[in-house]
Length: 194
Ligand code: NI
Image (cartoon, rainbow, N blue to C red; front, side):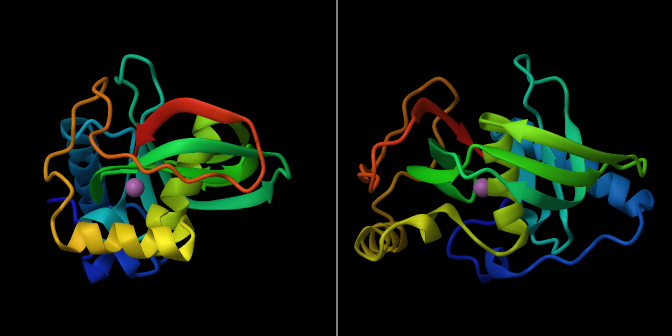
């Protein structure tokens, strides 16, 4: 199992609902968790490893020792209030993009044991869920950029101008673009890679 990198067309496939969790699914989930930790991510969607099913793994714990699984996640409600967060993506190494998303969401998902969760998430957890659910819809953070910036970034990505290896956590990103949000809104200086 390996993480697909932009511009792999499989990153654009819309994932389908997972009908049931069998032993094969459990192996996939274990491998996804391992990969997420190995790459210093806090989330990884099945689409990113070429499996078009609505699954992602994540870990929002401080110690990075509490892996969780979200199956068939669905956002029920988005807050009007927005948050801008510097997001990274394991499928687009070394790039951080300020993305505006709902600050709070209500979301439903299942874990690998069939337990159903309905929770209101806020800030980083809300951003993470929106980022991963975007992956399951075939969407990437670069899609959020204004046309001109997006063209420029894609040109650079395709010509290999961005460094290949993802920097380890704690080290500032080697490539950040500055996009001015249309209005001044609450910005979070933290960043995450999912
Ligand atoms: Ni991502």
